[in-house]
Length: 479
Image (cartoon, rainbow, N blue to C red; front, side, top):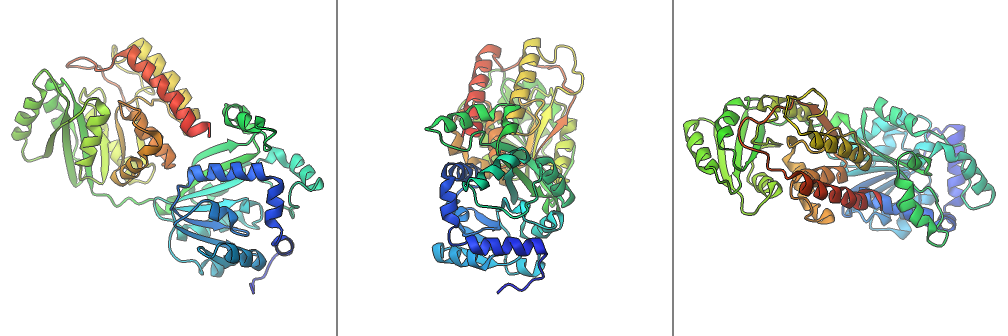
């Protein structure tokens, strides 16, 4: 029996939970479509075989639906927990008040995901409770708060009157902005926010079509019933990194090799420079070998790609890298190598996990970018900011940085997106978005190319980028 001093409201919540414990699943059956869609999106965020802690787990059915390798649930209602243990003995369930540290001490270890599905509405002190959850976090942990939209409150009250929804006791009806503010106060950094279910009933399949396509659109999506907020613990942002691999894919860039080596600053203890050459016709590979021997006091690795395209080159270099942090630097040096320390600092300071350069903030040199390229970049940045739920001003900048451990996770998840991106930019962007990595942009001053010519065919590659937008929409939005 749980022995905690409850507030009068929490006592009423507990009594209601105990009363409804045995018929909780019957209530869910009345809104079956809504709960199926809820599970579908949470399953998109939380991969199978993850380690999941559910705060306010009820009878354990949602936790079970996520198919975790390790699943732990805690709930204030002993009756709910007894049902959970009976129905899902493969998981661990704890009777406890999540606002009480002694209750949380019954749970050991850290988790990949911490889920609060509607639980935020039942808490007496949301900020203090969120603060207690850092003990279950590691650097990769994502906390997910799902809740009803504030604007739907009258409709939900009507559903309760019509006995289509389980009656609730004095909930905190918090707008999404209030939840995000509470997370910030509790040292959780909001990574992404999404809205789902404009029509929370099937209606002979019409609901699914509306929710899959119409409900995802800008402005309209904010009218949806369900709100999902994903965050990370700032207290666990690991900055103990000592090594970095700078990846320089190069094709017909003979005149830029020595300058690249000389201009990369020594911004960490163990800096590795990897040139990955791709079937050049101007003697780039021979130049790399020549210049590398000249600067043999530096840690320089030389590779040749097996296939074709920038993505193939970058992935091979990643697989042969040794650094904790991976940074891509295009060999045309239009992004000044001197700027790479900013990318290193953004990750080691914990400010971001996927760092993307932006060429479209500062004024750029004359002829640094063709007019049509500039328009296309600005257009794609708007589309991808909506698509990925994080602000992008320049998705096509070649300079990026991420942890090697996160790249390995992106690589292992690549089957979800498939082999669709010859550049590699969007493979990394989509992959980091799927992992809910915190994206931070570094504004850089974009320079005009000094040697060689661009490897990009504007119209052919533009069509490929449009195809990627449609592909990303299907994989990330129209779920």
